[in-house]
Image (cartoon, rainbow, N blue to C red; front, side, top):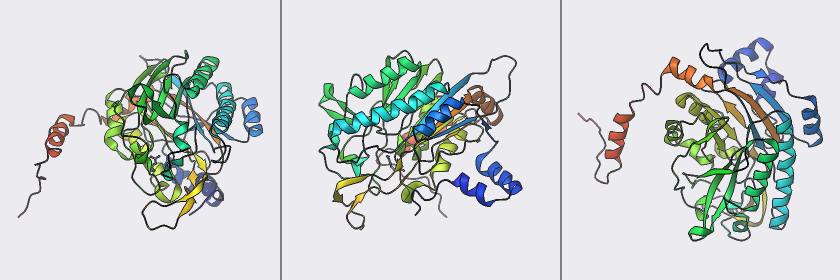
Length: 384
Ligand SMILES: NC(=O)NCCC(=O)O
């Protein structure tokens, strides 16, 4: 299993394929080619100085006669945790705030309207350990915790919508912990929050030890830059989770994640892209990067020897469009900012061509599902 030494699928294809073959392979694997965005040279200089990759792409969309283009720039941020996991909690959070502030500065230079960070971006992904302290100390109020206040500053300063996935502590309701994304309007106001609906119980993803399945349904947030929703990590394996955000009108669905190579890397390019196609919307898949080591060894009841790391977080963040086209991924081995220019008109244009919403037969599924979840349901199997 490759770690940091394998930079990216794209670089590998570019290195080894003759140009004509590369074009065909990309057409099949990536759909209609995206255009390189003309970003300011100062942004590239700042990215080089800050030691992160900056990639800019735009999706080509047909002009309409009756609607003006609805052009939006999204910024996807993937990053390593800058300090070791055994550094005091406040120092780690401060270092992460500093890192993200620097990347957001570059996003602002690139005209980003909506920025989204990786899952639980304020902490190492310590849920593998099943230990409570110090990891639960990273939890904060979604409404007025230090990270939300930090993001409000960012939103005001740059006029951006900020999607901030955190570990939430709800002190008003029994100190319960949640895996939550806070959505902050470009005005700086907290627009609302959404909670992770599906909690993994696979490999070292021992997240059910920490928080419960979300109880807020599938909210969609109306922003000046379009209607957005957040499907947190493991929710991307659940087509109905994407569907419900789309049924509530989402035009862009962010998928902030933390996932490792052995488990999911072959699924990664497929799932968010398929969700964009199936739901006539844009999807933004974001993954963290690198290795995180924890002070104590742990096991997860899967026969593996006790270990202290989670495996390799492979980055590779990308944006997929409703017509099935997608951007290249950010690298597997570096922090990065992907700036993608979307014209939201593509959602309805694709819907008019393929008509998945029109042909969806949701009423039939609703009835069948309502029956299927009953305890005495017997599956509809026809036998000789
Ligand atoms: N963070 C998280 O839910 N990871 C689970 C593994 C995966 O979905 O790839």
